[in-house]
View 1 (cartoon, rainbow, N blue to C red):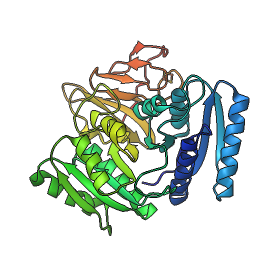
View 2 (view 1 turned 90 degrees about the vertical axis):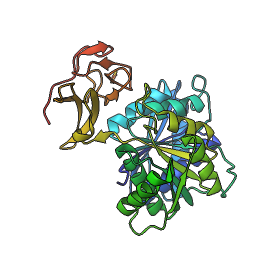
View 3 (view 1 turned 30 degrees about the vertical axis):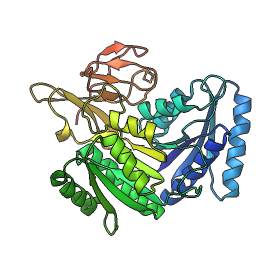
Length: 340
Ligand code: FES
């Protein structure tokens, strides 16, 4: 599942410059379109930043388009990713201030929580294990065998294959479950790959970070749901903790679409129908209710909030009931009924 469009947040800081090079390496390997984005309070200054970044990439043989917007960087990145249907946002783990200048840790966390696509957080360099490189040499991919984690693992293995990196599949739990899960994942998604399989016990996030360090991984790939079931947040507790503790870059793979058979009673999920995203809720009688996943405010894609049983829009906070009626604005109209 290669990326077709990649958004890279840039602010001119050294971390952002490294993120640019990482984004360019993945865009090259995936033959994806690269879009450099900057958000700021003065568009003229932002224009200078993105033009400099564009020239740097051009010198490395990579073409990128640019967008500059005034406003909150998290909202800007989430909105553009949604509008462009981007598969990946790449940004530095820290850089400039959210209010005074541009990116900071709070921005990378905000984007990781709310993005409608995968998010790659690039750590500040110098990096401790491998020399700074725009590509990855060793990728640790975490899975727990759930459909969501399995899709994330496939993305991680696919990325390792494209970048020519070695891969380590990590399962946290009992070997009687972990061994077959990892073998099945590798058989299904790692064709021809010689990945290491590691089953470890203990706290999921801690062990994933430890295995990554032991394997000298320069990238960890985790699913956005984590391994703890329902969460109030769009980002589960395991990926959140991995983001906080990992010493290397982290790719949070978001599996936006599901198949409707995976949606349990009283739960919702986004399903792709003829290329369109449909919000599907299975009521307590087992019936499926399908509504458009496009927020009626400005068209961002809503996500299911399993804690509150609502459809939430990541862009400006509109919330809807499971059947699409507005709970909170700025949206004023219900989600549009559709069919599967
Ligand atoms: S697009 Fe603005 S709240 Fe959804």
